[in-house]
Figure 1 (cartoon, rainbow, N blue to C red):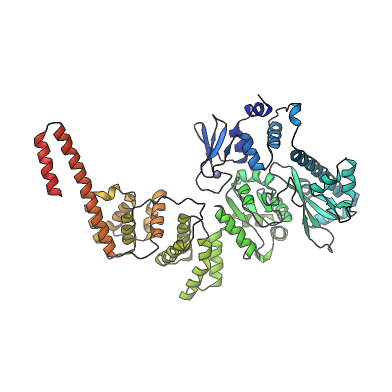
Figure 2: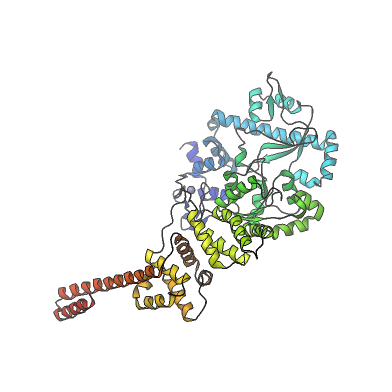
Length: 574
Ligand SMILES: [Zn+2]
């Protein structure tokens, strides 16, 4: 057995994967969850304990425990092997230390980051850090927070870290590769971070992989300077504070997203543990997926003036595409979380988080402020304002349900809303990656249900005709027909919302999908009559088939008089 096999034999893939994906559900020896490698709503990712193998039936990701860790962490085979061995206390035999060059370089860069971290922290707590410690205190960062977030200070000299790394024997090329050291045109080396407050950035397992530096010198060109991308740092994959926030999210099943390092610290001091920030980049799909593995409920707390701007809009679109449930945290007075906590106290901040409105309600409130609801033109404008956001939803059912919620919230007559959203659903071009949903209803059912919902004048007649036909009970939409009949008999007002409320989740989905599918072209009473006629024919055919089968059996069994009797019934029926 080689080393990899030896290590593999001592690992349980289910346990390793559940460290990354907290919500694995067990079905015998198979475990299932939402795929961490692609966006989906229903789980198609399976882990097979017997075979120590995983496979996604959506994106075809598959492999063993090493493949999984390599893909999730973006590391090489050797690194995955080493990581798993270390985590599980499995000793690595000597000869396996022979690693590829890239893996060795990453190890060296990690080591330099550990050294830099200690160096920056020592600077802050040392005699030269007195002024900056005062500054932190003034900004409301407690000593505990400074410790917890491992805040440090890079000195202004420009070569202190360089000297230190040289003493430890690192080579110039390695230092430049680490991103901690820069190289000028004349070939001389210098510290990238000078006179800055240093915020270490960690990977999900809590190892420092980069730094963000806030300028202490007001003259400085860049207020924030971040590490460049290196062998160990891909900024589009990393969320600041995720390694701590995931523990909080495990308890609260939510994440709070703020903009900057100081906001994360402010929120943490306010007792919000599940807080993350993108690291000086626009939010990416990779970051969203990393967060979503721990919770799909996101409280978004960006600067209020930024909430409407293009970057925030783009972030929200990405989040909706990844099926994240967004709530928007609103802080009055144009304050960011850090400022808000200082001015109004941490308790009020926690309250703002707890009472954050779902994104679409928040959007509706904005629309209400802007347009006059009493005015027909104003109502029309509100639709125009809200439609693009709803249209951005990937899932048709979700669009229908959000549309209904919003109509209700805004107090708008649902017929009008449905009309708008039908159009909208038709306009929406589906992502090619989403497989088309199987149509749950036959064309006849679709036409009949749309008529029954919307056209009062034909409803009694149609329902009467339906009752005469046994066929509707076999239809996949039978529960919807049943609800309509019951409501009609009880003289209840029939509307999409009213019927919707009576149904279970599966039938609700069917109903919404039928109503939205009927987007193109209107349905007439003649269409309805034609459907009833078709159902009649189908029923007759079913009965005829059944009679013919019984005749055959009777003939085979020699019951000739029975066969004749059945034949007579059949000829009457035809
Ligand atoms: Zn997948």
